[in-house]
Amino acid sequence: MPADVVASVGMRILDTLGIAIAATELDTSRAAIAWAAEQGGAATAYAVGVEEALPAPLAAFVNGVLAHSLDFDDTHLPSILHPSASVVPAALAAAQQHGADGRALVRGIAIGLEVCVRLGMAGFDPETKNSVFFEHGQHATSICGAMGGAVAAAVIGGASEGRIVDALGITASMASGIIEANRTGGTVKRLHCGWAAHSAVSAAGLARHGITGPPTVLEGRFGFYQAWLHDAPRASEIVDGLGAQWAVPGIFFKPYPANHFTHAAVDAGAALRERGITADDIDKLVLGVPAANLRTIGEPIEVKRAPETGYMAQFSGPYAVAVGLFGGGGLGAALEDYSDDLARSTDRRALMAKVDVVPDERCDAIFPHQFPAVLTATLTDGSTVVEEVLTTRGGPERPLSFDEVTAKFRANAGALLTDDRVDELAERCHAVATLSDVGKLLAPLTKLR
Image 1 (cartoon, rainbow, N blue to C red):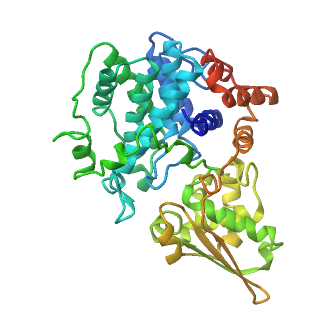
Image 2: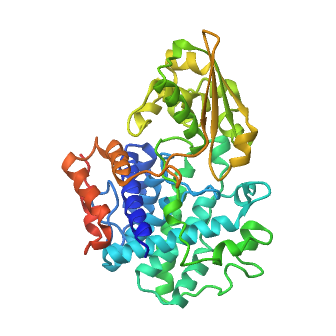
Image 3: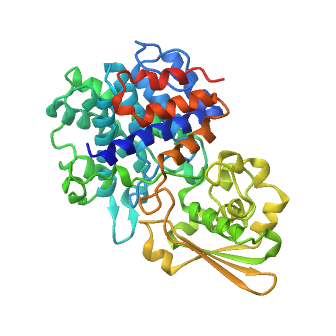
């Protein structure tokens, strides 16, 4: 494996575990853990926040649910899917199940992420700049994540080429996820990466016991492409450069716990603050974004200017500007900056009332390879200040260092882990390929204070 791929995998394990730790506080997480604990079976793997070991598929399920529950997991562009939240939990469970070492874990995760991302790109339409999966109401993250996770689990388990193909063929009948909850509500989306990871580990296990899948699972007349994408995919996205050109290091880390479309607005607000501009100095703000992002973070504007909950604030362009201008924790915005109380606070509501969100042609030209924003501030003295954020922090053009990912981990996990435990886990992830026992990553996280 190239050195940058190995380093990136270690960072993604640390990032995924930190998000999972923070998510244990959610009611949905408690429900998922309670359900998993009821199932019984041979206990072979640990899950975050669960004191007793679980069967590997159930450990993968719990960790996958936790990893995707805070809108804080990494993102691949332009496919706009979240690869690590399914693949990393599946790989961690499989590694514990098979007694694999850190080297095998890294290899499995890297290959699984690559499969996930390349399948996602097969469903990306460059003309409409959109995911065909999404247009069909399908959640590409869990569909492609199940497939990538199955390959990761099979590779870690020492499967032959034929058994890996079988695992893909089996998982394709288990991969699922519709995104209606994004539109009208419900907490089921938080389960999607858990089910993907569960399907992945289960499929690899079934293949190991002799269940077979169609060898044409992707390209066949009734295969993956036809079932999900409904027309000819961009197969070149899957095979060109496979094993030589790695997408893994270019997957975007999320520095802020909010919809990725809002991140440039946080940076733009922070840039105004760094100029010495305060909320009292501002008469009007215009946030220019890609037209495709407008319906998510700018419409209806009266709702986006007055989010009732922290969760609604995570999808608000005006609130993102407020976070940046007022200043946040962690790497610039942390989970505590998206509380219900702050979403309804008088000072933030007053600032959000000054924000218009509009389409911007320059941003359209860059999207979806980046999620840019242009913030124009008209000040009370009549002057105008413009802040352009044309690249997304956490991606290849503005990467996060291992220290920054560790800082994010500390912000997520610090309330539930001691400083020594945080440092220890960061060190283990930094050198994950040298671990002899993958359980050392998970065992300390089963009992959180």
